[in-house]
Image 1 (cartoon, helix red, strand yellow):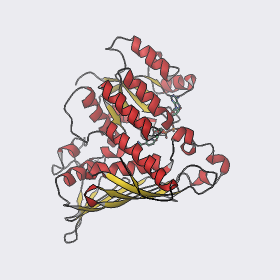
Image 2 (cartoon, rainbow, N blue to C red; image 1 turned 90 degrees about the horizontal axis):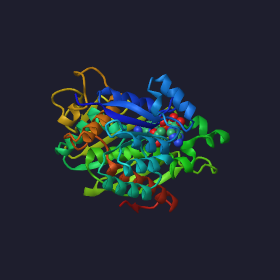
Image 3 (cartoon, protein in one colour; image 1 turned 135 degrees about the vertical axis):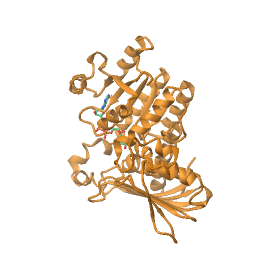
Length: 378
Ligand SMILES: NC(=O)c1ccc[n+]([C@@H]2O[C@H](COP(=O)([O-])OP(=O)(O)OC[C@H]3O[C@@H](n4cnc5c(N)ncnc54)[C@H](O)[C@@H]3O)[C@@H](O)[C@H]2O)c1
């Protein structure tokens, strides 16, 4: 096993939602060790959390700028190689850009930036840097999502007729109906979240899944948002009609007010020779449907799966793997790229996915604001 990759963490403190997923995912395939961090804007909180999870305190910095400054003073073979950005959205761009400009690889949470313009600037910085950039669209790491992609690529569905992706949650219900509460959540604050809440936070995952699995691109879209209250500037629900290349049409539905829903990301791809259906809450079952044959269920770890899918399972069939493993697969792909090893297209979402995602989010807002009209993607 080559030496572990030296990983720094930004955000993802003890109070965060996503930090634990990244930390465990980074350890799962034995590729990384955490050597330093800024877990929180409060230095003491960062230090306390580092103690709690037993990371040496000498590289827990007071803020991000200090992290870069101090790390650059270290010999190259001690310095962090990659930083994982797990902060609220408004910090992704300044952090990722400065990291790339200073020669660090980056693993970054979605949405990649606050807007499309920043995304294009980051893309240029990435090109110049020659470093690895991985975007954590977590769900692309599931073995059955990878399998769907590979079978569609091999032409198993024939011509695609229709795509349908939904991402429904209900978590914002107890917040949105209370004026005080809704002004205290960063996901509803445009200065911290960007121009969209629901579409930017979860609709963009559904968008990414459609392009990831079909290999097609969304060309134009028409969006209808729901804000529920006049004083709320951020969408909490949205439906998007899409037109892709090869005359494929479809729909992306996303909601944070779908009462009782937890994390219902589901995708269906219908083609002339068959269809696939996959749901995140039951990730180890990929349904292959037909008009003439009984429905088949594909499962992870079996030899009939593609190389890309099998690379994402660690145990024999029947041992369920889940969200931690899915994120771990993205970290594994990024580790191969950082070490300069060979890796398959699709092992981790890239800068290009981030740019597409920001173009999508911005166009959904433009379409809604212009009166629910069709707008063209780049
Ligand atoms: N890939 C996924 O499936 C997925 C799921 C959830 C969240 N996310 C993304 O992850 C990001 C974080 O979301 P979350 O729900 O964990 O947020 P959160 O509010 O729960 O946690 C944010 C963390 O960032 C820290 N932080 C804030 N400002 C900081 C600063 N200046 N320096 C260092 N740390 C700072 C906070 O202390 C906290 O620990 C968001 O961009 C979100 O869109 C992605």
